[in-house]
Amino acid sequence: MRTRKTILVELLLLPANLVCDHLGLTDQHERGMMRMLVNMCLISGLSVVVFYVLWKALA
Image 1: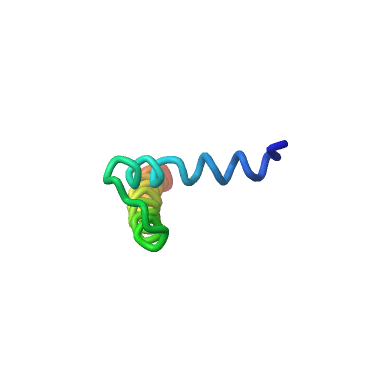
Image 2 (image 1 turned 90 degrees about the vertical axis):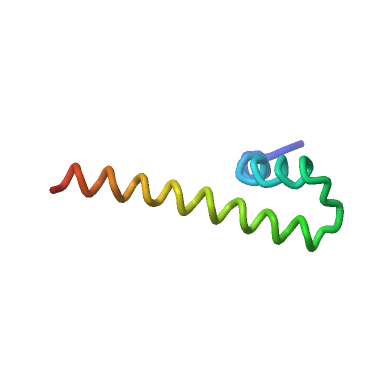
């Protein structure tokens, strides 16, 4: 039985796993590096948007 925690982890890893599958990466070390890259790009992009919205809202 899947818990809420495992479902959340699967949702967070889904974009990176889709990229890895599309690129045909099978080695777990390569997949880990690609997951890290994709997740950092997504988190950085989201952070910039949140920062900009807060900057405009509080200025």
